[in-house]
Length: 73
Image (cartoon, rainbow, N blue to C red; front, side, top):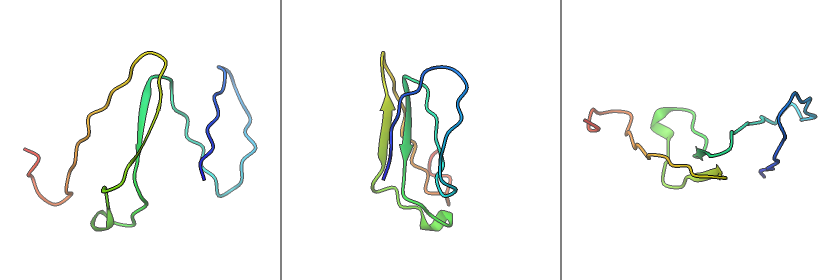
């Protein structure tokens, strides 16, 4: 379960559980999330979640590295 909240500028104290991790994203930025993996061999990028908070414009480049070879060159 994900919770999204837009905060105004300034300092905040957040009431969160010990097992929660807050992520702060600036406006017009993109965050790409994948499934949890314990090792590079376990990474599965077949399904990604793209989160973007856009007021003007935002873009990203998807770079798929297999983690083993130099095929990206």
